[in-house]
Image 1 (cartoon, rainbow, N blue to C red):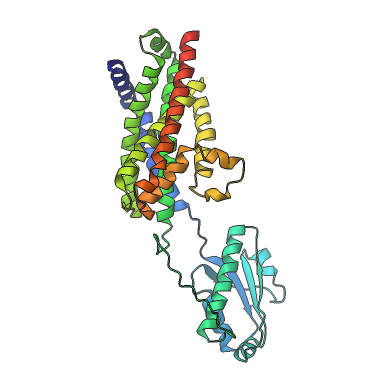
Image 2: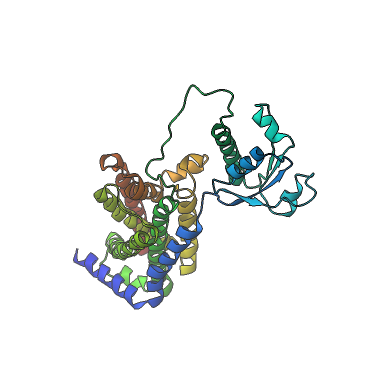
Length: 369
């Protein structure tokens, strides 16, 4: 145990002396939180839509006002002759064009079928889906408000948004951003520290010491986990201040998951460092296998059910995938201890595998040395 404690003290002392590493540990994660929190927007708003109204009645004007009342669509001028509906999409950058025909108000008031032409630019599928659903919902609301529906539905669902009734996107993005940031930067620090030992040749002194590979890996992972805890305190506190996050779930299960997650991140970094021969190679390994998978396969940006096979199998073994759920449960959903017990168990299993793999690789290197 004394050997491990000595190794921990040595790692922390080296960390404190390197100003560049200090900036990497605390300044860059804060910048990343700002970028993810403020730049990531999954819900499209203010989508430009051009409307050409050939009708002179009041109902057509009310219908147009209803379309833009939600705030998701923004009115854009319908330039050109008004005959070619594709012209605004080609020249003005609008995402949809709507043409209201003559006699629209008269037909609607007489409860006759009035067709409205809508052309949507589907290059961006998400925007196209938002525009389509918004137009359909606005049209239905317009008919209900004017009591123009021919038949009344026998089923009337009463819908209520739960957990996030205000549809505050920061409540969805910020917890996921915490998970991704706390996976990447502790992992990167540990990988650079391990690769630096090999690049500078100081790891030969460790080979010659009485430290076993398991003790050496334990000292490094514990030291950088303590540093990662300070990073987590900074990131979570900043999220409370900037994005208004608050604990609504079970706090003990979150902190248990947090500690295990940080340890697994550091263990992956040490594992990457044992495989790399230079610091630049360690960065490339972390960026490719760590950052990319955590960003795309953890459920941070895209629902897990949208991940196709066989990549869906990879997502099942990622610690970031489970901590994203833990963070959203803690700050948004408010789940209890029992329903989340699988999260720390899954993360602990991944951390154990990474620790053993790194120790065995280092052991082989010691024997060769």
